[in-house]
Length: 391
Image (cartoon, rainbow, N blue to C red; front, side, top):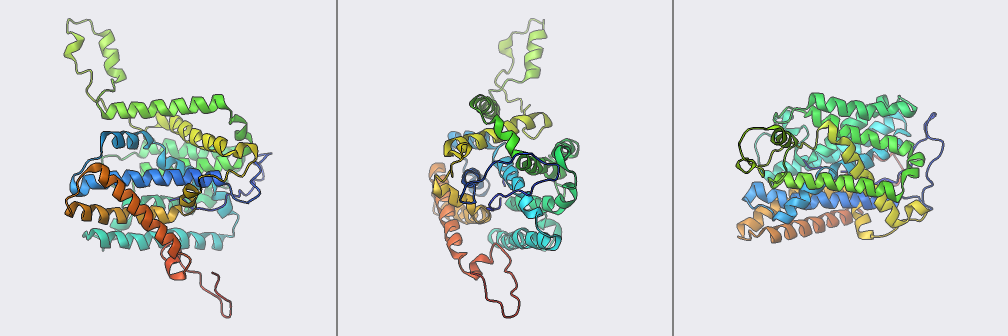
């Protein structure tokens, strides 16, 4: 699956029974490492769709290298975005009830409807008049899921202190029970619960980031990186049909028949690894933790520095909602046009889809300085009588 996070400065509301020590934010008031991580995750999503959309529209598969990279980062792209979004939950909850829900209607429901309409116009598909077709629509499932999490967050966050950890743990357990892969329900409840675990785990991380910062040591970083890298390598090997399943290995060891091992399909893809399974969640969390800790180390955030580097990537992270909602319909149109022109090379398809989609997203970011352009992503605030407009 695919999947936007808000570019908000992370300031967490302290819990009455929360952490005793909070990490000190940079003097600028913005933690740039979060923009870097978010921007990198969004860039991975854009490049993934740049190679995936041509498969379905014009039957052009990506190169083996790009396919392997997409497979390697698949468990971590959207999980990282959701965990970062959950880290910003405290900022939203600090607002009053009406302001909280009105803000989510303006920043989540509104762009969902706007770009859902764009999707139907671009694809020219039937079914847009059916309400069920608008539920978790295509790549906008991420915004839909975020809206669901923010809807229940005021209730779930009544659980205070370390007991709140039961929320993400419970959601992950629920995802295993409600898993409906292979079926197309109105709302894929298994996936909704699975990613909800990462969102609310982000809230736990934000509450206890001071204590968790003690684990930002190179031995822990290396262990998490090797764990995540090994899992990604297994997924790649599986897609190439070279991953030898554990159950087959046990049968080979225990088999006393005269059948030679060479007669067995040792390289057949067993497809035993499902990255959504409950057993792999600690591995995915290790990967997300490695990404965050390495970024914080490299930018100097762990040493109290501002971490202001790779500003082009920060720019994508700050405007992640724009890049997320714009790139997908743009790549649908680009793929169709390039296919009509007969340019079917997968490498050029990837480059054109990525560069043009990012460029168009940057254009929309620039247009947001005007109310009409900003209205494509946030519902305009209604001015009170006699009050000037805020630029």
